[in-house]
Image (cartoon, rainbow, N blue to C red; front, side, top):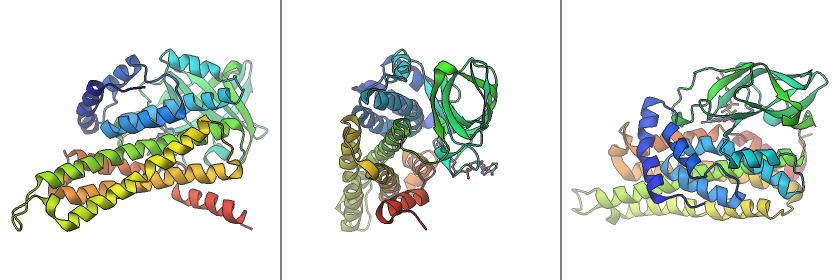
Length: 364
Ligand SMILES: Cc1cc2nc3c(=O)[nH]c(=O)nc-3n(C[C@H](O)[C@H](O)[C@H](O)COP(=O)(O)OP(=O)(O)OC[C@H]3O[C@@H](n4cnc5c(N)ncnc54)[C@H](O)[C@@H]3O)c2cc1C
């Protein structure tokens, strides 16, 4: 979709206030929803939209990412002939907001196991456990969760906001990405009804299309958000070099060969991101088959994007001089926001393990 220029400007104008006040992006969400931003579209379009949105408000984009991941999972399945999650596509088109309640404290197996229990009850499964970093906490209307059954299987499903048996702790106060309001969610017997169960899978790694859908959408959209942060940092770096003057030379810093090299180096890193993110997104949309290489390719794209974004923001900070270090500067906020990229799965260690396994086979 085409994000309206005025809407993007309004979203950018609100970002500093949400960050300062540690507030949820209520107004952004209302405007994005009204503009149809929550509705399904191809992964390539979604990735481009998210990059643009993140260049205006990183936290707004990151939080909306969680919704768009679920929509993308439903699309991946639909495009491969599985219509079981088509209801997500319909509800997203109608403006429902999906959040991603998967992360758990101390669960470094991420999707391959769960500390949450899923107990069979009449009509569904009752979930008890703690989910951390639930972005969109103040506003979601559908929450995707997963947990482990007594016979060691993993149930993935969705609750609605009016489902009894869950509460959100008002505990989000972080260095960056503050407007995501990713509170802890405590599940106390919340029931996922049978019609809202997405998958029941064995514990451990597997390449079920549902899992592939989560990885493909999550990693490429996370990569796109951080590429968007880098786009904006480069813009701010260039503007600073054109604006700042040197007493030594009597000219602006855009005439300084060292700083010209520095900003060019940032652009070189940035220019590498779009081709990889977009070609992989198009491959997901086009049902390309990368076989056993998929996880290496997808985790690699997330890794290169989040790490490059950190480098690019850092170069922009150096170009901007001390003004960029002020707490109220946009670059300072980008520096805090971009750091969050290192915490999203897959983390750097597990990415290297994925790639090493692809090259060398499993560790003996
Ligand atoms: C801005 C942002 C938004 C995010 N949004 C989402 C989202 O919407 N949905 C989602 O599923 N994930 C989300 N994530 C979570 C992310 O995917 C990671 O799971 C999260 O960053 C934790 O990573 P970790 O494994 O490094 O942390 P951990 O080391 O697991 O630490 C996370 C928390 O758990 C506590 N903890 C660690 N070990 C234990 C233990 N054994 N017992 C009890 N407590 C423990 C820590 O003290 C800490 O408070 C988000 C992350 C960020 C940074």
